[in-house]
Amino acid sequence: MTGAVRHVRATNAPGVPSGPGTVAALYVHIPFCAHKCPYCDFASRATARNDARMLPYLGKILEQYSELRSVGLLEGCDTAYVGGGTPPMLGGGLVDLSLAIGELGTLSEFSMEANPESLPADLVGELAQTPLTRVSLGVQSTDDVELAALGRTHGARDALAAVESVASSGLAVSCDLMCAIPHQSDATWRRSLADVLSAGATHVSVYPLSIEEKTPFGARYAGTRPDFNDEAVQARRMEIACDALAAAGLRRYEVASYARPGRECRHNQTYWEGRSYLGIGVAAAGMLDRTGYESLRRACPQLPVPLPGIARVRLVVKDDLDAFLASSSCADLHFSGEMLTERQAVAEDLMLGARLARGIGEDLLSRARGVVGADALDAALGRVHRSGLATREGGSLVPTRRGWLLGNELYGELWGLSEGTIATFAC
Image (cartoon, rainbow, N blue to C red; front, side, top):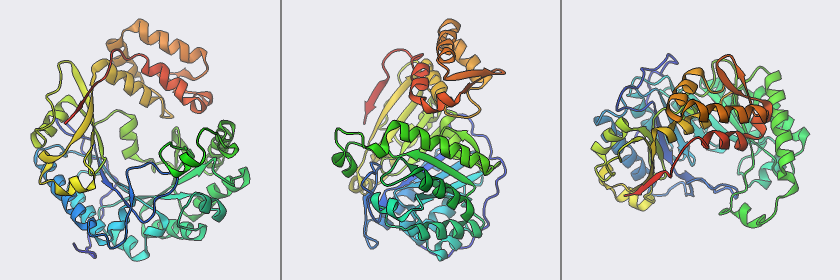
């Protein structure tokens, strides 16, 4: 693998629209981390820098990427995202991956996740010469006491230096920040928000700490709701973020994401807009329409034939790292999945669309009315309106501030328009 390749970076011009049998977005999962944080339940593992499996893993990713391109799934792909884990653990191999993905030639946006301590300046410089266009940094906080409580291995100074380094390279920089965490106050939360903006972030995602069952935090706080993570604290911190980021010129475009005009994450919007995406790597997830799924089956004939009436298929790679490395082609992979009818897919699109600040558009509402029936749709819209969760603006259904804070109630009402049990499979 090379480590110092130069390339002309992709522009932010609109991508070529994906067509029948193709996907709008590509996600590549890198499961390696230098350290596993005690709150993290993502598909990642603590990995030594000299772990002999990293380069073979990258080789398998590149092989499968090439195989999936050959069946036409990535023609017209608009966005790509390399996540994890900590992709920069691959070092110079990440440059090779970026160059390979950039060969698609249709990308309007190409993002990569990183932790602040994982991005030395020389790697940032090399990545800035590839088709990569943006970096999403897991800052979480700019308070050293809070970072230590979260088990993070970077300090506040490291985090802000990384933001500045990426911003000065010409890459767009996004920061993830976490609220309702140990030792955090309203004042330190405001300071974290202000710090990343001052360092050059043009996109900020904010989210409350989720204490997951199968994590060290889950064991530590089993059966309890610690005061620092109280629902009222979560709501107040999210409202503080909304006000502070809006005052700084960042517009909320999704329930937890804010950006300066033109810096919204196009890739993440793919998920909320119900467009097809493909995942490559251990634990990678994908969502395809029926035609795209049939294209995927050309590379993965082990996948089952879609049932009659199925409009959408969700699937996840189930192979662990060793099994993934032992695979000789996409045909050797194992998946779990769900098959959704048109009605279930429309209900899912309504639920996901309610995460967007612009709300659920007139076109989707019209399609839903035709699929689920006018009476059922209007009854659900009436309930969310009377509950103060959403309001009609022009032809769209737009979440209210109450709807943002009580999102599960809003999403539940919309998903309730689905019917029947989702069909599942494993292969």
